[in-house]
Length: 225
Ligand code: BTN
Image (cartoon, rainbow, N blue to C red):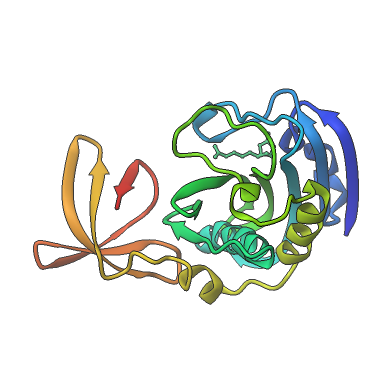
C-alpha cells in the first residue's frame, strides 16, 4: 500500500483520483484541506488538528449489490480507532459515528463499478481530533473525551491500520446500539415511528412499522433516536 502525506490540498478525495489507473491500494493524508468535500455536495471544514485522509482500495470479484459493506467497514474502522484511545463509540445507521452522542467523523465514499462488480472505492474520512469545530451543536472531537491530548498523526496511523484489515460486518453491527428500540424515520414527506430490528447483510436496516417488517436503504431517510 502506498502512503502519501501532504501538508495541504484542496481535498484528499480529489487528489487521490490521479492514482485510480495505477491499480495499487493508496492512502492520501493531509494536515488540512482548503476545499474539503462532504456528502450531498456540502463542504467539510478541514482545519489543522483533524485527520483528513482518503483511502483507495481495489477489489476482486466484489458484487456491486454489496457495496454498502465498504461503508460498514469504514465506520467500524473509525470506531476501533477511537476506542483504541479509550473513547467508546456507537454507529447511528447508516454512517454517523457518535462519541458521547456527538458526531466525531464524516465519511464520503465514491465507488467505481464495472458491470455488476465493485472495482474500487475511494473512502474519504474526516475525523475531528483537536481541530476547531464548525459550530454545529451535534459535532464533537475525539480529544474532548480523552484524558490526555491526542496527536492527529497518531490517530491517523491507527486509522490506516484499522482500515486496511479484512472486512468484518460484525464489527459494524455490534456498534449499532439502537436495535430493538423505537426510532423515528423521515422518508420523503412521511415521518413515522418504527422499531429498529436488524442490520441486514447488505447494510439495509430492517424496521418494524405497525407489525410489518420493511428493509430501508439509506437514501433519503433520516433516523431520529
Ligand atoms: C460528511 O460527513 O459529509 C462526509 C465528510 C467527509 C470528509 C472527508 S475529509 C477527507 C476526505 N476529503 C474530502 O474532501 N472529504 C473527505
